[in-house]
Image (cartoon, rainbow, N blue to C red):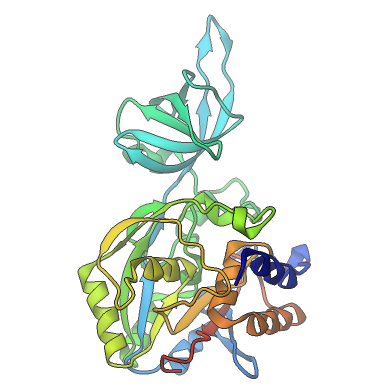
Length: 352
């Protein structure tokens, strides 16, 4: 499929979403959200019924990255009693020891000084996407829990109380700090549901992909001109072994979230999933076969986004169109805190 064809797919998958369909709070309990099983016909279930939809021997693959309190209000220093004021800082990631990339609002030139709590930083450079490089005098990470807030998506009205989001905008299995957005398909799982899945014979393993701010970046212009942000990922030898073993034995691999799909496809070497770590800019569009997962659990995504193209590549454009039509006609809630879908990989070479 050519980039022009991908542009056409994205246009055909466009839709108007009323503001009141954008979820502002997550379902309580988490697994009481709706789950659309996308097949022929579409089936409407509750997420807590997932053990009934999976088989003994299926392998669930989670992204265990944890969201960091990456949004910080920084202070500009006073000079001769003048200046001061605040700047909003969205930390992206630590590029090297004590050097962070970040979006600043308003932006600052190189050489400017900022204070994030008690931590001093200097703007030392700029990246192609407009992010600044901040050099800190010491390790910032131990201070983030105190000075930062969780960087919620722009379509969520967060309010002033950050405490509730510290728990709710994390998966219950999150372990490794590094994301600036949650791998939201995992927000539907509860410890009790994980226990029931284990009792039913469903296996589980985990990868890590630290989600970047680019996950919110819409495609503007041609698909061919869209630049994916680099994101760090890791696949352990144990996880690679579990996935490759499941594939050899004809058991289904179930990816929890598009970040897990991107990790697995980045680690795919043409015959198996490789253990290791690295950076990925993988951009999965219609016409790109998704080789590793057989099923995908995912939320309902923004029109015009890279994620819409990924799910169309995974399940097929016609099936995604039907699913979104059903969600819009029904009472489904959209985006990060909304409801979920269970998709089947369109390829026919693996077990259904």
